Every structure is written in C-alpha cells, then in structure tokens.
Image 1 (tube, rainbow, N blue to C red):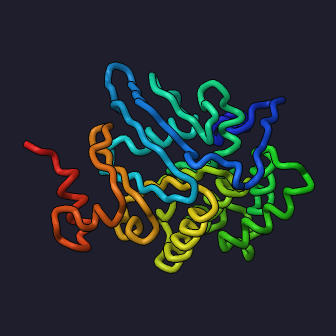
Image 2: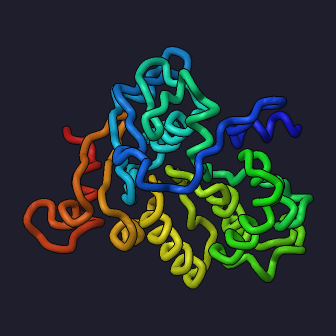
Length: 271
C-alpha cells in the first residue's frame, strides 16, 4: 500500500533522494514547462494526439475541455505519472523522461482524486508529504505550518483526514502539492466539492501561487478560468484545438465577455 501511494505521488522511490531545488528564484528558467508532440495510446486507441504546450514563470494556464477530452491524461504525462508513447517533456530545462527524480522534485501535483492517507492527521500527513518530497527534517515543521496557514487548515491540524468534509480534504490535497514550493504546480479540478466561500479562498490561493510559481489548472468552471487564468488551452478528442489569452477567449467572435458561450462554440463538433 505504501509503495503504491509513493508511486501515485511520484516523487521519491525507496532508497533514492533527488536533489531538491530551492523555491523559485532568478536562476529558474523563464520556461518552466515545455511539452512537445505528446502522444498516448490505450490499447489500440490513440487518446492524445501530438499535444505541445509551454508554461512560463509566474503564469496560470487553464487546460479546458469536456469530459473525455484528454485533460487528465495529459496532466498525468506532464507530471511523470504516465509515460507518453512519444514526445518530450522538460521541467525547468530538465528532461522528465531521462531524469525523472530531478524533474519531479520541481513539480507539485493534485490529481483528480487527491492521494490522501485518510487514517493520518492533517499535520502528520503533510509532514510525511514534505519528507516524501525530500525536504530536510529541520525544514519540515516550518513548511507544514506555512502550508496549513495558506490553505486554511490550521484549525484542522490534529484531526484525522477521514473525518474532514470533502472540501477540507481537497484543501489537504492542494497542501501536499505545494508544501515543497515547487516551480510547476498542476491542479486537476482543485475546487471540486468546495462550498462558495472555500472556492473563493482557493481561487485566491491559486492566483497567489501563480505569482511565485507556474500553475496548470484543469476545471469545468469557466468563471474560475476568468478569475485566475492568464492563458487557456482547449482540448477536444485528445487534441489541442485552441490556445490564447483568457481575454481573447472571452472576446472570441467579437462579442465581449462571452467566455462560456465561446468555449461551447469552439468545442462543439463541426459537422
């Protein structure tokens, strides 16, 4: 069970320690993530077709598309949890496929189903996540305290994760993704199950994360995209079919502030 969870988080294998980078600095490349010509098959069915994208330092990118468009599969490849059949991925100039430990140390990932140990307390789980990411013991306590504060988890520190509401469990999932101050943060549906007040707080946090790191955000909430994303990439049937600024999508076709309508127009199958 433990080995399976370690693989899900995808950062450290037994008896191996990556060279963990410090927080984002002036030495970090402007392009924090670069993916080229990614392709993926499941059996005889090709589900991802020649996907290429870039993420810049200090940017929030919205990855959009209907269910089954290929967003989660693409995110799993970008984080090293799923190998592409072909293509390349670099994280801060580090080849993810050739040097996975070093590249993954710079990634924070919240999958659609958060990888939580529900029998642990919030504090103990985040301490474990920090160590899993390769943090030195002396830095763990401060990292846990700061991350709990940023994610609104301070009152929940001693509570068992299984006893928390779905919204607070989602916050714990976000906390484990950012506890090591990664350069690239990948969030798959981060506000699922949250109430309106929690959604507001998490959107504010995502925007703050985009100031310090680079963020890829997958969501079905178009108002969320408008409030936190600088750019958008839209997928359909495993292909990228549109990419531009959020403002350009909102004004696509000449009508201002039509984000949802334009998204539907672009993603509708053409007959």
